[in-house]
Structures are given as structure tokens and as C-alpha cells.
Length: 451
Ligand SMILES: Nc1nc2c(ncn2[C@@H]2O[C@H](COP(=O)(O)OP(=O)(O)OP(=O)(O)O)[C@@H](O)[C@H]2O)c(=O)[nH]1
Image 1 (cartoon, protein in one colour):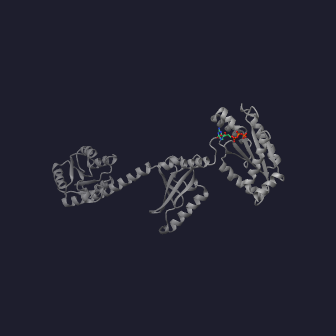
Image 2 (image 1 turned 180 degrees about the horizontal axis):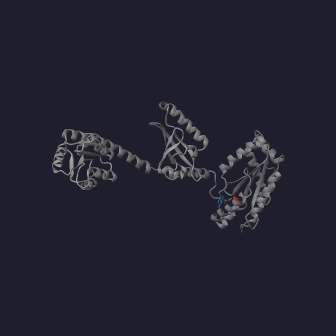
Image 3 (image 1 turned 30 degrees about the vertical axis):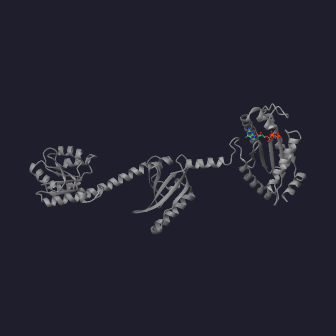
């Protein structure tokens, strides 16, 4: 049998401390206990018994009551008062067999009381019984200690919740995650932590389980937003498992996924943003345009697209270097972004040195004015472009297309018209805006393209 198992056979090597001031009694008891296979220690006074007990941690103490100096009762009191010895079972062995003495012995915490004269087989049987009980309770105590250590040191938050939603227990990790002091959460309701809909969903699940525990199953893991004590929200995975003891209880395991969530958000953001300029990238712009296009088709509102291209940018790169070119693109991007002011405006880097701006509910005249202000803004930055035949500064050419899209029109057509306008701006000297107005030839060209 392994050392952790319970029962009498596991205690054959148990250590027994025998305390008696009469040498004959001491010898006789020691012999009996040794014959049973126990390891024995002896003490002939209460004071000595305390010393030995604290040193050798016996599994059981056979304690005489009437002794000079510290008697058995006083010794027992001391044993029970000291953390090292308080859990050691004590059996009184005494010639005092009157009821008061026996009751006093049990009141002091003794597990048994044997009257003298001793009947040795009975003493052995009682010792055996107490050792067996002790082995069981020690095993339970060790298991509980082990469990306590695990619960206190685990990284996951643990909650024990009653069927009515009252929190019964939380471990230190849970308190830490949610900003509470130890035991501060006990007695609170889960609705203090979760949003009302989620809390109600859990309460319904608790009620179903409490009504028919046999049919219940684990609620599994789900992502929940939990209110931190300081009011902020933390994102966690919550796993709930039912446990039916004297009452239905639920074990909640909390796993912090805030970091995971943050990097997920960062990834999602990275997938939408151009790393050089921090403007929206082409993919994000296309899906944004798709939504605005559909909205404009429904509402009949005009939609304007600007295509901007940096003038003579190849010359800029060749002259000042690619790194300077990158910085220049960042400055141009910042200026462009300053003009996307409404929630439905979006500026994006569409390719190398080409940018786009989308304006919902904006007609051709307004779009043309906006484009002119973007052009003027960039020119006013006065970013030196020494080799440009157009201007000493960086300039842009802008093509604007405005449409009231109708069912069946193709989005690509909007780009074609804006691109055409932009190339006209280039051909006619750069650093200027060209607009295709609704109803004009450009729009007819678009419709033709869509057919
Ligand atoms: N520094 C830098 N240059 C880029 C980037 N993307 C594209 N380019 C450069 O931008 C230049 C675009 O040149 P072109 O399309 O020939 O036109 P351009 O020189 O701007 O002349 P026009 O458009 O006719 O005024 C090329 O030299 C590309 O290498 C970038 O991310 N960084």
C-alpha cells in the first residue's frame, strides 16, 4: 500500500508517544505498542511530553492525567494550543474514571479516554481505531491543502457561484484580474460583473441545472466582457461547469484574453492600414467604397471620388533618394487626411504615389472645391522638389468623378472617370484639378463602360 493510502495497515509504522510518571505503566504500555509494530517514544512528565511531541510529531499520544507538575489536562491544553501539535490525537489513560474527569478530557479535545486498570487488548483496539481515523483525516487534510495551494497559485481565475448567481468564493487570480481585494467578491452577484443580458443567460442556465441536475451539462467556454472594479472592461474566456454537492454550485474558470484580443485588434488594424502613411490601404478603401456605393444607390445621393497623383515623383526619388521619397509621401498623406473630416469620408493610399479620397453625399461642385483645397494645401507645404519642371515644390494632379449611382452601374466606372480626369490634369500642366460633372460626357462614358 502506498504511503498516501488510508487504513490501519498504513499506520503499522505509526509513532506513539506514551506519557506517564509511573515507570511500570510506561514500560508496560511501551511493550504493548512495540509488540503492535509501532514506533514508541516515552515521557515521564507533561513538560517533557510537550518537548518530545514538538520534536517528533507523533501520530498519537497516550496521556496519563495524574502527574506531578503539569498534569495530563494541562499538557493536553498546551498540545492543543500549539500549531505543531494541535492536530495530534490524544487518548487519556487514567485511574480517574468519574464522569466529570472523562467529560473534561473530551472537552479538552481528547479523542478517547481509557480507564485504569488497563485491559491491554482494549487499549490496542482503541489505538488502532484512532490511528485509522487519524490516517483518514490526515489524508483529507493533505488533499485539502494540496487543493488550496493549486487554487491559490493557479494563473486562471476561479469562482464558485451559487444557482441564484451569488458568488461564494474567488481565488487570488480572479481577484487580481478584476481588481478586488481578497474575499471582496464573495457575496456579490454575477450581475455586478457581467452585462445584464449575459448575466441573465447564465442565471437561466443555473436554474435549468438546479431543477434537473441529471440533464445538465457544462456550459462550455465563451468570451465575455467583465467589469473591472475600476469600471474598465476586460475581455475573458469564461468556462462554467456544474458541481452538485449539498446544493447546486458552478465552477467558473476565467482566462484573461485581453492581450490576445489586443493583438487580434492590432492585426485587424494592420490588415486595413498602409504601413508607410497610416492611411487606409487599398483593400480597406475598396470595401468601404462598396458600402458607400450601395448606400448611394439606395438614397440617390451623389458620391465623389478624387484620385491624386504626386507630380514628377520619379524625378523626386531619383534626385533625393527613395528614403526622402518615403518621407515626402508621409507628409502628403497627412495633408490629404486633414480633408477627410466626416465619418463617411475616407482617404487611402491606393498605390505607390497615388492617393484616393471618397466623399459621400457630395456633389461635383463641392467635390471640385474640396479637391482644389487639397491641391492648394499640398502646394503650400512647400516641400522642395528641385528638379520638377512644374514647380519648385511638391505638387499633385487631381481627377474628380461624381456620380449618382444607379442599379447596374459598375463601381470601376467611377475610377475610370476619375483617372481620366487626373490624366487630363497631368496633360494640361499638372498641379491642377479636373472634374467630371454628372450629366456630362464623362458620365455617359461611364454608363457606356458599364454596359
Ligand atoms: N519613395 C517612394 N517612391 C515610390 C513609392 N511608390 C512608388 N514610388 C515611385 O513613384 C514614382 C512614380 O513615377 P511615375 O509613375 O513614372 O510618375 P511621376 O514621376 O510621378 O510623373 P507624373 O505622374 O507624370 O507626374 C516611381 O519612381 C516609383 O518608384 C514609395 O512607396 N516610396
